[in-house]
Image (cartoon, rainbow, N blue to C red; front, side):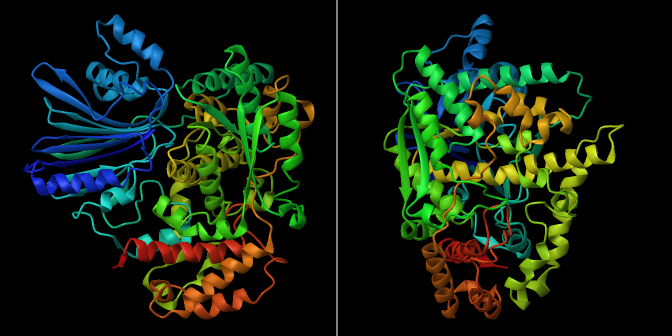
Length: 616
């Protein structure tokens, strides 16, 4: 895993001293993503930069990597991991290619040389990369099918800039931190999610998952090379269970490969427990010693935990159960609530946008501690979206909501905003339009009942609008410490297969992720296998609420704060006086309630100030 950037100017001049300094600043913004090495490639028209986190073949995988194609060069800057490197390498060697390294970067570059822009169809992995094809005078960008790795770009007249993160683009004076009312609508009405492709800043775009981009003198062209396809599921239940099991076993095995230490996140829930069980077995078979596992909790959390429909029980006893069964080298990371709050600023800068408040900062602090002992981790993220684990797959009111089910009442957010913001754009209509756009994208299947069609929509919304928010969080919070977090449940083969499995199979025994549970029978202890889902752990300590509430109110007392012009200060003060512990209704997802509203406002204020955002 790494950080990438590039700059193309058809008029040339990128090799000047001034432009070299600009490229260096762009590369510097990616230092945390790639702490092990850096590199650059500059010619008159093109400049590539790279920061490296060494995971495979540390000695020989330096980037940008250059290959000669006759008298011309092909150059790559790449962030990601290919899980079918061995198969691709064998295939290319069969065609006469020879390799100088053992790294997937070279395999990817040679795949492009052989297959051109269709090389993306050959890849199994998580990736974002740029390739400069000197012979064709063509820049080729691509992003993995699910969107695990980030990639942003902006075009300015005859110049094109791209990078792993927004801050990388903003380090180039061509890209100004301007945000219009649509960008604010994303922050306040869609946020902390983002509409796919929307880079918030004016003129900045995100390359969508499953898309590639070709940029030549004639301009840019985006290509959708992968999408979900709806078809009749022909396998019976037993066959479906077996195929899910085989796919998961193969995926987990592939994603254990690394030349550095690999660990697992372990919450005691189904998803992380399954990966821990498979990883422990892999370690045993390969005689790799004891698997390291990590869990996160909060100081004194057990004193204030109250079971709810969203969070039915505490994780700690289940973590202990898994550690006892698989004898892992376990590390319990305890997060202090004061530090959790203080990290809101750092998490905002790591993400480049206001994020999921303490849901972000806890992962930020968790990643910091894991990095002290490992460089690669496996996470159970995204099994809920693929197999149906969230409340909105079960609760009728959420299923039938004419809005994103994790944010079913966008109009409630209007109370938080200033009259100026509300009068500048029909914000509720904006949120509703983004929802309708998503629903229109759903690949339909002829003959489905109304209920089956709606469940297909719920899965599509979850996979394409909710899951990217969590993947973005995962990437930024972990890569802020040079920690590579792999997500086996996002393997595109699993996603493709599960997509067409009917709801009555996924909902086996009327249990969330019932199909996945059945597929994991024999792999996990029975009690862990059928444990009621509990989401990512959050703090329940009133100390956290008090800290963020007082902090947000102090910001709103400062008339020079850019936040003051955007929010309804009187209403926020009124909310602050209510008993938030008694009516902590989530306004985004399962975990963002009253405390997270104040934390989100802190993050918005941080974002506006740090990036010197100009509202236009």
